[in-house]
Length: 450
Image (cartoon, rainbow, N blue to C red; front, side, top):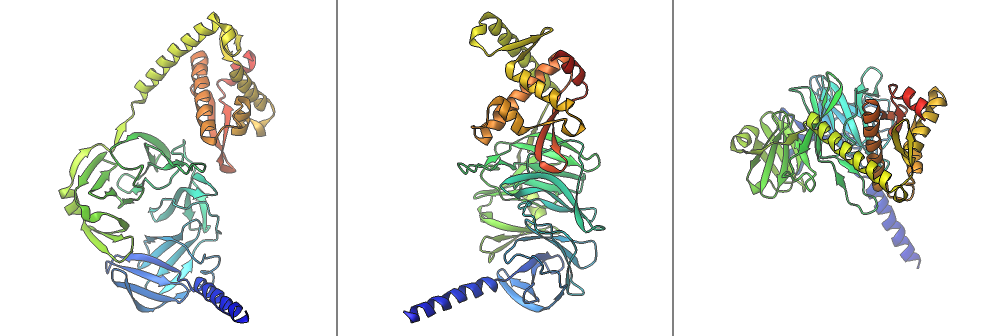
């Protein structure tokens, strides 16, 4: 019996030691040698890939004492070329950590003063004008819409204040910054987690963020022929999105709004991508098979098949929605007056017709307005209580709530000529919290009416 316990203890210690000895390293594509380099922070060893999957030690390096502080035993990282000669920047997924490796001095330092938050997994990160940016990400069972940049002076991440709202999330799909027109493109993100049935909901919209105006623009609906709902790995090389299928490669130009295809099955199952000049280096999932592609050759071989997205004509769309609303409002009004006993109560004030729930919501907004500067809004929870949505799924709550508010806003537009009279915004102290309030133009008339 004692021998069995001894074997179990030894086996446990071996497992524990194996977990502790797991290699932790930062990796990047060396633009000079066109090979991958790697630095192991535990052994302080500098490695270079001799051929796919085979690494040779090329020396040692030093690191600052704070580099290992709060560094997970297992992590994934991204690398970025710094404007400083022979320097590489690294970030660690799910954290705000920023590191710099000086290849000439063989020195790894930590630049930031932040701590691990776990909020920005899968977040698109990029360098613009020598500044590191992070858009959204995933964490705490929710998606983030917060846009941040790394402030080198304060050594912390700062929020970007935009002129309007953009996508619901930034998670996989088409995410990339184009230096050519100083624009960040975002499309086909996951917008719902699907915790109950594990079915992901993918947006079919493409957005563009202009850094000069700090505004988002909804460009249109993504081409349904693209496999963005099934193939989630998309590579952005700075000018084109590259997306793989077993028998073809899609090359997508968001600036020209073009999709081209290269037919070649050898690109199947490619996982990791790196761009150096005209060359795109790709690795299979086992990391032991490398394919080198020429960007010029690919573009020459590619055949145009259609647009990346369909433009949205907002003027025509607005007239169409307004026309349909007026027809629907007329039909509803007629039916309510003809058979009032079959419909929910309607409150009529000076010729303005509001349903009971609409009246309750407007009263709640007005009451919030009267409570003082700090509470001039109501929350999603309060709206759910008015509409009695508490027992419905989050997906159904959002669908019913959005439809109800859109209809009420259209009615207020018809009555008072105020666009989006009930406006939606994010709480400054917590960007994940959505709130609602009345626009200044509509407040006096509603207060006098209700």
